[in-house]
Image 1: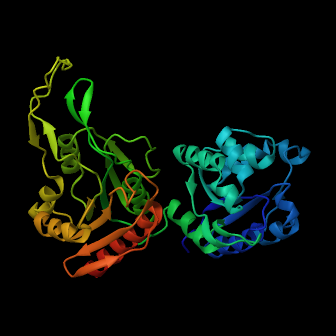
Image 2: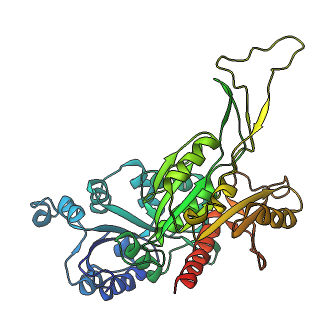
Length: 403
């Protein structure tokens, strides 16, 4: 059983999705885990302590000020004894408490007292999920290493439609199994990902760069790790946190990135999502270039190393699967097909970053998977969803080649 011997502390928040927590307990136990439950005061409006206790086979914990439990420092023991804390449903209130370190009940106190990994499954009305405060809190928690599963998009109990539905119990249990080291489709595989822009210095205060945010590359690294891969992420300068569970190497220039990539090999698959600057300044100034009246700085450009082409032609050290990205402003498919042939890689993931496309640095993406056998057009979706779909395709391809 995938979770045999693992101990899970399940924190059930107050939302209509709390009824799914009972099914989640069943799933955890079928997979071999032992489960303890903390039920918030609001959660008890939807499911009963007796239901939780009956399914876990253990007491259901509800009260921070229980004389019997707290005599043994119950909130500390509960959070430290578990291998993983799971919050499902994770309401907007619970996410806010976690993000700001509040601890005014048993659930929030246990979450603040833990030194173990935490998996949250958000569930709330679409407007609550998309509200700036909830998005801020979620981003802060991800930066702290909290793992999110969902929310899904669909019809809600309130009758509205959109993101905010709690992930299905099986998906939450799968995510927990991956975090606890259970087998995933990429277990035992080494995946290398590049992400973000590069900065090519002009002088000590200026540089050549582009608008890449790193969101897509970081999402790919996180998705590969969630499927059990040993992931190395080589990232240019970005303003987003390192994905949890991923070895991240921060670099600045294209030459730095190539050096880090070569050190990270061998790998089973290399995914080159970084927007590497094509050129750098050949005569980089060691002092700031001063603005002269009527004159331009004496800049001379030279080509940067082509990281994708270099790795694609490495011979014995070449990864089994090499995936490149092509950010184009016109003739997206034609240019991607030409790049595939020119670079020698296996796949190109192409997207439109023109003004009309509007994806460079944004949260949505519309991509085309270009291979030697054809082109597959994917619908517009969030960058996390693009990452999950691409990594699932990579997992299936590697498995098919190695059977």
